[in-house]
Image (cartoon, rainbow, N blue to C red; front, top):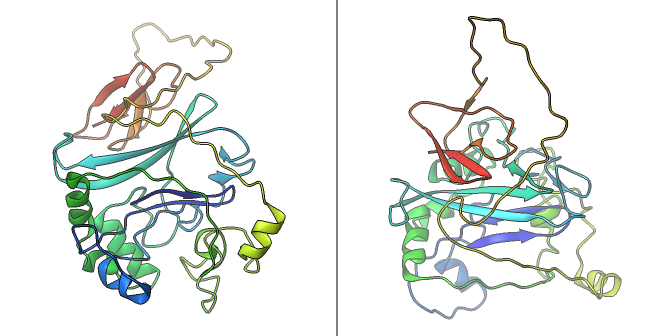
Length: 277
């Protein structure tokens, strides 16, 4: 499970289901027999939102951020069947939701599910190895067995990281859905250049937490200048908009819509964040 593959230009989170259930050694192309090497990725840029993540963008990579990954089960319990993986960010005291895809045929999706993966592979004309290896059910079994968090900083001798932040594969038309993954040129990412030009490249991870959904982060939003609204006698006001399942519906300083789409209700996770469940 690649919970966070990123640089300052692009990011992705990607489940890679495997058919082996224990520690297994492989070499070269043999490894592709065991695991879904491409995985089912969610890269905001690749999914059509070129302004969500990067320097000076909605999630500004020149600043510290909190990355949240939520593993949703069918019955919304910690022991239920895994059916969905969601991503959100917290920066400058603001919760930033993952945006829906703008790619035709994928606009209903904003998270990773088996349905999303099947649709994405079809639209992007990729083989759905993810489904062949068991998809979300296989990932669920892996998590039940127990996983270890491993962190690294690396460069890519095989594909120069173009699969993350440029056009890839190189033999495909960049205008086709799924080919553009970031704004880096296709000539970038050569390890010789990376190691020469950025010998002191680094990343800092801190305050790593895991727990029930909504319990691992908080956001305090500056309410700004108070405003008053006059309401004529005999009338009432109601929040506008409906919030989809798992969307934010409340919290300290939150000013967005608070009405959940049926049949969901707004549940308080903590004083800063309420979510439609």
